[in-house]
Length: 162
Image 1 (cartoon, rainbow, N blue to C red):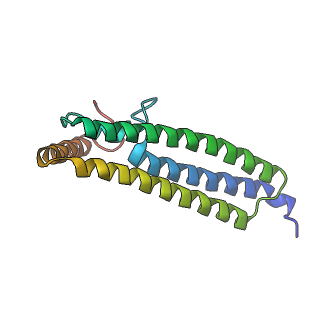
Image 2: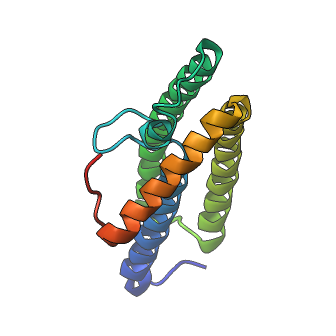
Image 3: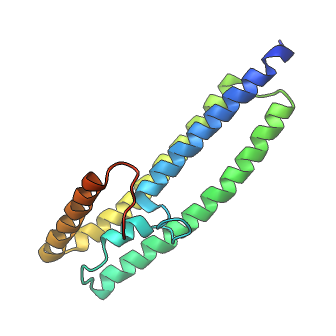
């Protein structure tokens, strides 16, 4: 059964909305763990800024370096995948082959991959956290609490000084 030509704009809009929502979810999830350190900043920058000034030992620095390298690679892979996905979606829409089931299947696949990737990154962060001594952990808590206090006083959307 072929779709009505009248519904083509609706399908395109729904496709765009679904794809945008998926992209936003992936961006938020990856940014929470390993996103860019600001516009054009290094991958993992947000998270790694939390670990600055903790007087890390050489083995801890290696964990940070490995995390940054892995985050950079994951973000590059994610960018390449997003481009390929967008090209595939355009082809499906152009050929009027996009179905609800196919869209759901692709979203489920992306979410499963994203979950696995974020779990791997979280494991690396936990390994770094587990390597901290009590003094470093106390400094980490103080740093995060200070950040939360600044966020509360600056209001939503305000990035403030770094």
